[in-house]
Length: 416
Image (cartoon, rainbow, N blue to C red; front, side):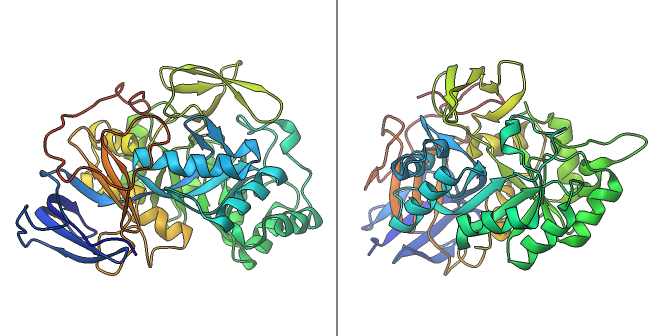
């Protein structure tokens, strides 16, 4: 049983308001109280937040790797290492994301069944294989299949009940039928890696598409003749959308535009992070074919210059939304917490600072760097731990002295 913890003197970001000098009481791994009452700092179990931001733990719907490990290793221990590393950056739950890769999927499912330290894997996010060969982005052609309902049946057998989100291009052969089948099976369907016209994208939405993967990237954009996938998503309120807010994938002005059109409950901030996240710039290997990923100034590209994921973390995504896209703090936090919780189907227990919710908590300083992370009421990361795997059973009882640490403006995390 997790210990009773009181986080006092924090700036609490709740779904309704930002509470100054607030108190958060955690009991049995859940939030027991969110209030403005003052608690003596000398009381047992009190953590003095020193006025820092106390927010729900981040939920990343689209993450492939972190700190030297990724889902392509097809090893449950790699998935557990990812989970342990993600808490350094405030992420407490995630969808493990990959192209359709049966060995990697088996490893993810095994790690989920056995349990992970650190962040909790909520399920699978599969990009493809029924996507457009014209909008592959960094997906190899070998992972783009000729669509069929029989192929879909095999995919569903491989993923089992752990498939939460699957990307489909509705304009491909059998695309609309595949969307209907997935939606009927209870899988949330995302449009992405798609060259669909407005009419084709709208047909996919009518069939059951309710989400869009990395909005504006690897999809037909907006023109004067056709608003394409991006414009159709922006003008359908029922469709949520992901944003990679590293200011590399999407310009800050476009980030602001997306939020203005869809609101914070229609946008989920994602990392699209790869194994180089949290590590220095350099050349990294990816997938089983030893594909090279070149990381420079936090940007990840293939040798031909194609963007191939990111080194973004969600604390930096929130920072960019607030400081570069001029989004209010509470809205930016909502896009990394409550909105992805709702998309992942866990909003009844995660994504908000409210009594009865899981005590998945992140504490941020004024530079949006992560000072402490709790998962279900247990401290799993605290400032001062070193290395990419920094799981800690206990942390400092005061967070008021250490100063901010900043990384490159608009880029990935501060380098370890």
